[in-house]
Amino acid sequence: MQTDKMKIHNIIREYLMLTAATLILVIGVYLFKFPNHFSFGGVTGIAIVLSAAMPATPGNITFIINMLLLLLGFLFLGKDAGWKTVYVSVLTSVGLSAAEILFPMSHPLTNEPVLELIFAIVLPAFSAAIFFNMGASGGGTDIVAMILKKYTKLNIGTALFFVDMGIVIAACFVFDAQTGLCSLCGLLAKSLVVDGVIENINLCKYFTIICDNPEPICDFIMQKLNRSATVYHAEGAYGHKEKTVIITIMKRSQAVELRNFIRETQPGSFIAITNSSEIIGKGFRGFN
View 1 (tube, rainbow, N blue to C red):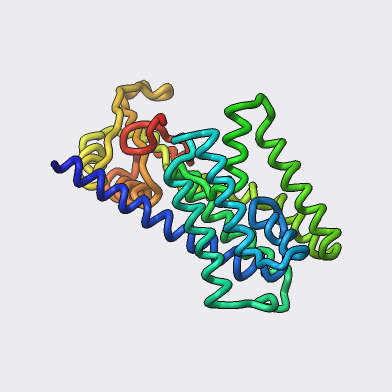
View 2: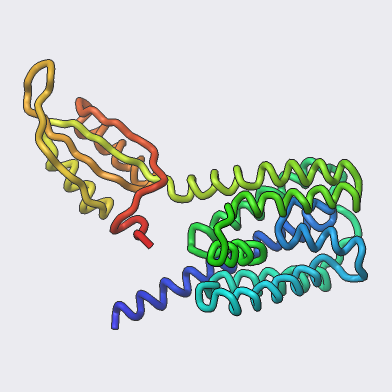
């Protein structure tokens, strides 16, 4: 029974995080991307270009394209389309359409296109990093990528990049050179921001501690920080004295506590701290 409650709690927490990340995505796209016609890829980029030639708003076009792609996803992928991706895609589409009704915008928020470009890149990229980290995506062209991956041998990353580049080029002709160049900068910077955010979300500290008295340190790690450690015995190469080496991994906030504890209680200990964003195992990330 307790396990079922934990599962339900985890599912609720995941979908609350997905909802918050989707809200950030909607804000970034609607307030900064749509008004400036920044068209750096994805369904929203296609919608911005098409809205210039069609009597429809970018939000409504995004909604239509996302629904069509979800339908294709279920037809070609079945359950592989993923309910989290479906949830994010529908919520994004509804959110953008609702924003156009509730908060209509006829011009950019400010007169600083570079500043708005930064927000148009950072906010959606931050939300995309959260989606990827939770095994979801924003839908849209990601569904096309999943279909291509399943039925073809194409290099998906390269194919999607050329599609996004095509959207950027179209923006140059539909709007103007400034919009096209800003969109190109957005396209090039987006992947870097996503990778950086994912790395920082998963960042952990890998400790190698060489000390004379391991018991207090291990007790602090297990009882205070609720982590575990690996202990083995070693010998110093210079003085040939017996030493104990403790290996442990933890989140950044816990790392500060451990470092301060060792400094206060065993200042003669040697500590090597390494950053790592790929820790796989119990207490961190699973294999799937």
